[in-house]
Image (cartoon, rainbow over all chains, first blue to last red; front, side, top):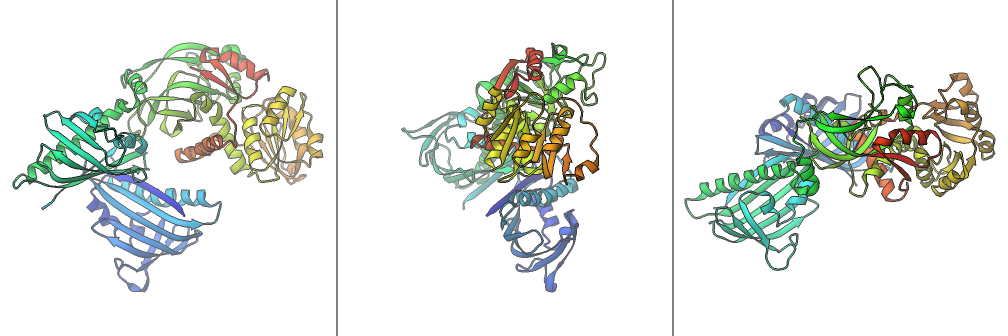
Length: 146
Length: 492
């Protein structure tokens, strides 16, 4: 099992950051790498089990199923059903924790997956840097940086 | 009803450094100002689950606390009060650290639940939150900033006030030329600017690139003007003196190495952008880091990116007993490649063989193509020789071979036309290693591969010839005489 873990500090309260990222169908609104998104079968985006169907800006199609959503823990867990990335059993969690000192947010994004031997480095870098850190960078820009 | 207090902060230091203090259940009297004295009862160790610490507080209170869980993987410590002169009942607290990968900092979460006598809930919640947790955050932050966890190293760093220039020794080139133009001078290293780290450098790597800079072969990279001398050198190892605004995760006393595309490393103190700085593992000494960093990163790019070397690849390495040569011989042979090396003496041949070079050609006039072709031709050539060996290199190349021009010790290569390459279906590249470590994550990833190859023996501990920084001229003369083996390092 490969594990990727990226964390950052965002200069806004956890409630505020959560409001921006909670929508499982809302990636294109805040993540620079995502072009469009829809929820399959017209289900609500906060129904656990719903599937988001989206395209990255470089044209890749990805389908992901919402596995857990907690407004209490500010956390969202999902799995990949279909993607061009060449990963299997991919489960990721995006989670926020309030930093009481300064009213900021500690944001963590982690994933576990299997992949073909030899691709670990490339995938770790692509997912950790190109997806997770790029998302945090966009949030930091949006909320300003301390 | 149980009271609950949660406080959290971000500490500007790597998690290992914060955890080293926090995991010690007996450390509080060194960093937390409310604690006058701490001791572990009986003969238990301070990281033994079940041990009890006895605190005397500055205000005269007395508290005994027991460690009930310690988790190295999750960086978590849980403890409870067993006896206290303050009215906290059923008090259980947990400290959890998490890495902030963005900036190499630490998220610190401290929470507890407890009961209080009626009417004292708010007062005791505030005492725990502000008096213990928030004060603790500030105290630990200051403790780390002054290097309190580093002992002597931190104290030395603390003796240089931040934001003041520091005297330093550096090698200045006021006119390009022979080794004698490398003249040591006294100077001042200004405080680090935003995004910079000021380093106390103890070991500086000498590379053939430094010779080109000194000779004036790359004036754009190291300009030399009246009143503005150039200082060569691309890499060094030492400790952090202080950091500029916006630099996270590095503190005074941290052992680091630095490497970057702008020369200036031949100095005892200097500031560099944080993107050039990497932490050093404890087992890698300063002189080993200086001897190996650029050479190891070069080998990493060559073997993993430019010419992926596999079992059976025939790799031709010139100057096989030199700094880069020895690293390539060992690392490529561990990957299963057949390494063919050229050297200039029998003594160097023995050294190259000892590092995994299977076929060694001793030649002082750059004649090797026939010998290489008898072995089937070279799939990959790593060429630091340049023009004098140009025709021999092309003749040594196998079909579909890849010729990597890394240096030009004998002079710039005469132009190579695309039609010449087609004769052997060959490829040619002229890489600059700094482009392969241009981002800090890539630098850290490649450096980690080099240290790990060193740790498990895929590359050997470098053979090091040491010179004083002031004797840089002598080191260059030795390097150019072809008399040296292995890596040259200047000690400051």
